[in-house]
Length: 530
Image (tube, rainbow, N blue to C red; front, side, top):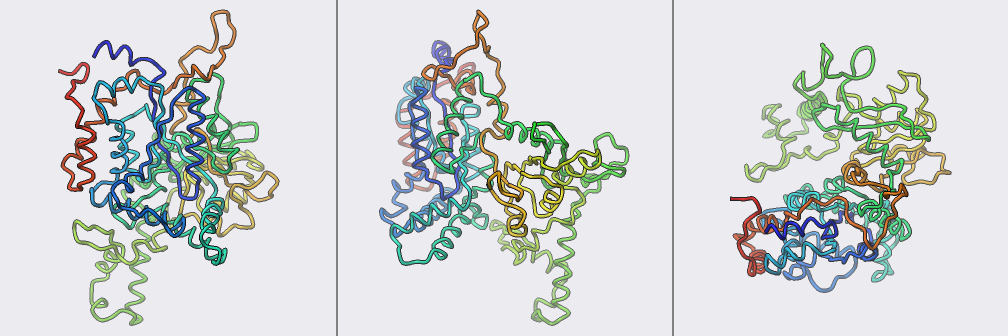
């Protein structure tokens, strides 16, 4: 293996990408453009369409009534396959089997070739974790973004091909339903949940139009294939700073960061979600009288939610709205049952208020939200926020949006969506999503390009940018090398290790796929082992 290991250090060898895309984006167009751009840097595209396994296993029909029906059937078939396999990453693992249809020696040689494998597409967090575990730095996760309305329009246009009688409203309703299902099937044990997977993107392609898609793909290859003179855009850099601010938070729920920047790229203020401290600001590690939630030992918002449920049940009980059997039970037991999480292993069903809007309340937490923290700090230090841009790791909630509007911030750029936010519904007069520069409303925009997760791999450079005579290097597309790869493709050993769990699968098609992948493989020893 030592001779092979030396060869494996070459930079122009195989790379991997995995697409993460919500329903309503033309993925044929995305993969076509991505493949064309790969060819322009002399890389051969290798598309692995994960839903093809559902076809091969006979789990979906050959024909569909319309586009939404096709999506719905594929989603249900994918969910069922995951349920049968008892794992949410099964389609990603099956995709890996496509790479192992030859001997180990042939796989090693294949790893040396300039080839880009494109996994189209992942919908489960488990799929992300599995591919990340196998390929590590050798894979880039590509998010695909388009505004929701353009995705609705795309689906309606596709439905019109076979349905010219339904009204526009009816078709849009069907489109929104399937988009919602795609975003979050949390009520299903193995349902897809793009809302959790999308934030894991290293780079987000702007799929709003063919023009923006091509520009995004061009920039992706320039950044990750060694063009030494691509620096972060203002949105990418400022979002990275906002993400860094999040790491100071010790909130019991999650870390959120925000940063306000001027048009010139100057920091106005930063903030994270943390409990406010007397005399201004929020608690720091060195504060003697630290009274953050972790010190007190509980989340006040969660306590108030329980109090509200308990009060509501008590009022229903006193008003005679509950039958005798339920009314006779202990009030706390009823409260616990109403908020109960589903646990099929324990035989516990989900409580009636577990997913109700009541559980979405957020205003009783002691911490200030990251956006609030940034805005109040700017006021505390007498720094104007008028005409500035707020960058945040998560889309602002409706509570923060009020402050954003009132503080004169003109634009908001967020990394992750936030489904509980009612900003668009409550502030239609003051907020627009993906609006134009000429709109008087606050423009809320999703980050496109390099995300905070992919920032370091994209822009940290250890290579020289000049020749021996002092002249600047020139990037040659046809000789471009990926900058994010590990020194050797260790994954040629871990691919089969991860797939070995499929050998005992009770699902016939899955066991056969593993058998096919392992048939021509030979036992190998990892370099340095033993």
